[in-house]
Length: 204
Image (cartoon, rainbow, N blue to C red; front, side, top):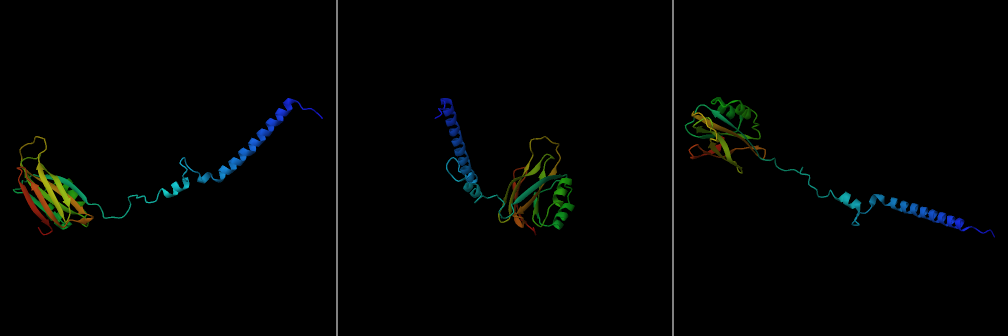
């Protein structure tokens, strides 16, 4: 019998071990590939369940519902002082044009009025006497519930102005859930601090 050297035996043993390791590795790769798309995370949970079920019950905010209440405003000043505060509800373009015909309110207020869609909004025109051109009417509060409740205050800000009496005006465009306003109240606080309340309606 031929006697093999120790080096030959060791080489053969090493080759056998390498071959066995290669077979085992290939087998493990095949098994992991069968389950690669549906693996588990570190907590042992099925990742496919997380991915497919994560969108259930989500609210993207696009659900139905009433249109949001909308309020917008602009101020104006006219050189003719009013003797008393006044508030008028304008519910259509004809009424708005009639109100505008008697006043020189400036381009911004005219554009504001003309851009009002009276099918879904109304205008409240508020006026009060001002001791000088620095005074303006500003909205103090607005509530939309069963009509409109508006409070406007004559405010002089912090600037110094020449003493020229004028009328401070305010146009408020309001829509209640996409519908025009048909009634309400307006409270005007003049530059002396006196409060004046008006009922708003299409016929007032």
